[in-house]
Image 1 (tube, protein in one colour):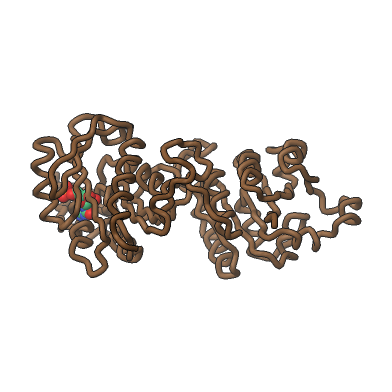
Image 2 (cartoon, protein in one colour; image 1 turned 120 degrees about the vertical axis):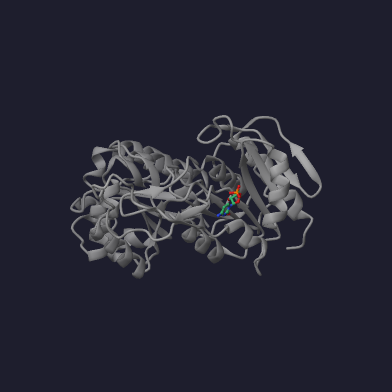
Amino acid sequence: MTKRILLIISGGIAAYKSLELVRLLRKRGIAVRAVLTESAEKFVTPLSLGVLTEDHVYGDMFDLKEEREIGHIQLSRQADLVVVAPATANMLAKMAGGIADNLATTLLLATDKPVLAVPAMNIRMWHHAATQRNIAQLKADGIHVMEPDSGEMACGEFGKGRLPEPQAIAAEVARLLALPLPADPLAGQPDFETADTPLAGRHVLVTAGPTHEPIDPVRYIANRSSGKQGFAIAAAAARAGARVTLVAGPVHLPTPTGVNRVDVETAREMLGAVEAALPADAAIMVAAVADWRTADAADQKLKKDGSGKPAPLPLVENPDILATLGKHAKRPALLVGFAAETQKVAEHAQAKLARKGADWIVANDVSGDVMGGDSNSVHIVSRDGVESWENLPKDAVATRLIEKVAHVLSARPD
Ligand code: C5P
């Protein structure tokens, strides 16, 4: 039977993405009925939504004709799922407070169906205590809330608050409607055959990005990792049908389609998130974890004391996440590490393989502009020897690596 969703679009620049969302949902055979708030109508027109949904678009609570033809209670209950995308800070506040002052909010109060809210707003609005309180309340009320993406915002600021990509929202809707996910969820990336899901039923754990180790409330130790290679690997694993957990340090990258992302800051938080995600069939540790952290991060900003001498900054070693997994009771069947080297790349990787208890080390020469760049020259070092790949875009490295992971796992029982 055709699944139906009621899509509530609230106002905000991200509202224009709802058109693409509708297109993707329709492509999956999901019927969409749209409701626009008054401010959303400033960003998308009922006409374009009507064309894409092939249905009437609802907007004004007091449209008597609508009220006679289809009462709002009925409208809210004919769907299998109610999706609010984008959900502005204002909309989330009304939902959390049970306010019903227009058609959209009235439907949300009247529905007896599951609700998915997809927030989108400026970073400061997202981090505001009021918004976070509302999100916690909505979750406690049983509303599904997607995490916003991090990245550049329409307002020019960087950070968390972007509407997730329409593909990611469509994948979440399909999940909640219990529809099977296609192998390549509409990503338009022809790396895998659509029917090719060699990692279906597998859990793949990926770490990516740098870690930030606080010195005081305003300063931290970091490195130049962009997270691009790890995110590309997580995306490739999801396209291959795996359930993917991506533990990400602080980076400005959107979450790949179909990937569960856990954001962390420090190495110790990353270790905690990695252990919490076990068991996994394969773990691919791409993060450039800081080797050291300050012995004691200061509670207050460190100040010059006038003596001309810098403040002492004693460091202690961070836990080695890869080595911890190497000897973990729940060690993944396939454990892959990365090694950024500037010289004797393969030789150092062999030593690392043994030291960390990994199955493969993907060694890359970072003497060029690999960090932050879009391509990578890698050598796959295992007990069987070294396989050197030509310089490839990071996406292609990811796809090939995941094919290799799938090949190895397919030889093992579930
Ligand atoms: O020892 P090195 O930092 O070169 O090793 C790199 C590999 O080890 C990467 O896979 C990285 O993710 C992992 N690593 C880790 N925890 C650390 C340091 C590195 O998981 N504290």
